[in-house]
Image (cartoon, rainbow, N blue to C red; front, top):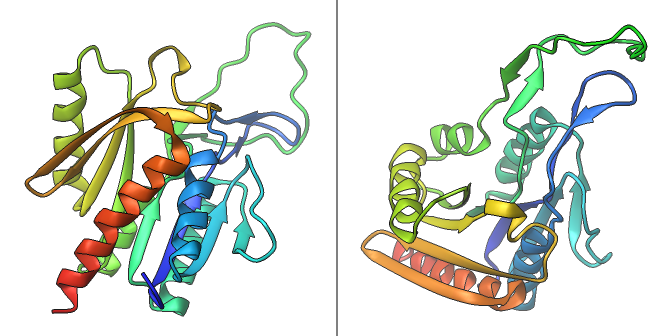
Length: 220
C-alpha cells in the first residue's frame, strides 16, 4: 500500500428534522477509523471522511461532515483531488431524510407529527458512475436470519453497486454497533471469507490485505 491513495469513510451521518432534532444511526465509526489507521500504517496516503463517532488522530488527514449529501460531496471531491486508488466506504450514511426539514423547532405538545421521508443519494453508486475502474470496498449491514441470507444479500449488493469487495455483517439486535469486535463476511469476486468475531483492527488488516492484492493486479 506504500504510496497508494486511499479515501475512507466512517461513522454515521445525520439528517435534520428541525434545527435540534435529527435522524441518525448507532454507528460508532470504529471500523472506518481502524481501516484508515491500518492503511496509514502501510504507507498509504489516507483521506478520512467521517460523519461522527471517533475522531482520528491529527496525523490522519480528515474531514468532518454532517449529512449524507455532505459526505457524498466530500467523497467525490477527495477522490478527484487525490486521484485515489481505492475507496473504502465503511461509513453508515443515513438512507432516509425528511422531505422538508423545519426551519424552526417543531412543537410536540400538539400531539402526533407526520414525517415524510425521501431516499438520500447513494454514495457508492455515484462514485462507481464517475470512476468505473476505481477499487471500491463497500459495507453491507443486514438483519439476516441466516448465514446464507447474509451471503445472498451481499452478493446482490455487490452486483448492484459494482464493488470489488463487500464486507457484510449481521446487525440484528444491534450487533457490531459501538463494539470493539465484530464478525463479518467478505466477498470479493470468486472469494468468500468468513471472519469469526475478532477486534475490528484485525478485520481491517484482512480487508487491506485483499485491497492490496487487487491494487497489485490492477497495476500489472
